[in-house]
Amino acid sequence: MKQNFILFLFLISNAVSAQTPVPEMISVLGGRFTMGSNSNDFKFDEKSTPTHTVTVSDFKMAKTETTVAQYRAFCKATGRKMPGWGLMADGKWESDNHPIVNVSFDEANAYCNWLSKKTGKKYRLPTEAEWEYAARGGKKSRGYKYSGGDDPKEVAWFSDTGGLDQAVGHKRPNELGLYDMSGNVYEWCNDWYGDYTAKAQFNPRGPASGVYRVTRGGGSINSYVACHVANRSFAKPDIRYFICGFRVVLVQ
Image (cartoon, rainbow, N blue to C red; front, side, top):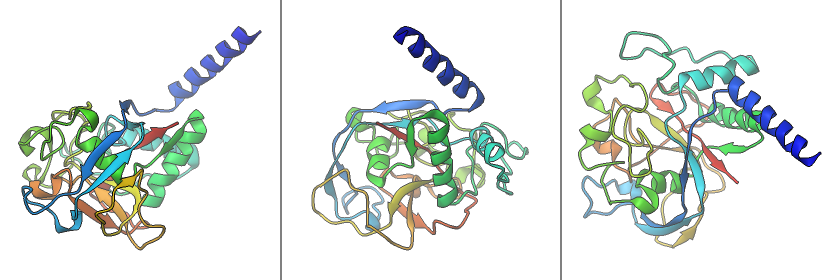
């Protein structure tokens, strides 16, 4: 009887996955790292100072930014309209393998909640600490300036693309196998934006409240400087930005 029940759950899970484009997830083993940058770093960002020691727990992160196809499934299931802007470099609108853009933090968060309900798993947006830890390569980090290398042209889409975002997963991945953590589109993080402190932290979640949410990674309209793994940015959570998308994490 127990074996039949387990088989039933397995079949149901597979049926849900077949109907819902579930992001491919990469396991990120938790650990300790130095978050932020300082004046000795290449093109350091003053918003990313002071450097401080952060420890994060295990989690899984989507291999790529959330795609148009994945977000379209959410819109169809919930009766939402797809974002109105989506002109891609190949001349097509809303190409399935491009990152979804022009979605607010609130909409990205709603997608995570929907995906969690559909799959019975806990998806959410990454904390800023999780995002930077993963971008740096986690425990496999080689200390690169950008996510996956020191040459931005090898790992990131930035202003040399003419300001247009590109299909996901075509540049070199980082040490964990994550694509486009530097460049292509900015990515929403779960934290309210706030100044750093030098105090060591464990699984930091950012301020309790604020005006802006953190965005990370740089984008195709920016200089390669914005693609540095420590570079910080922020945006209002209820506004859509044509160069801002997101990727999800999966937690226990």
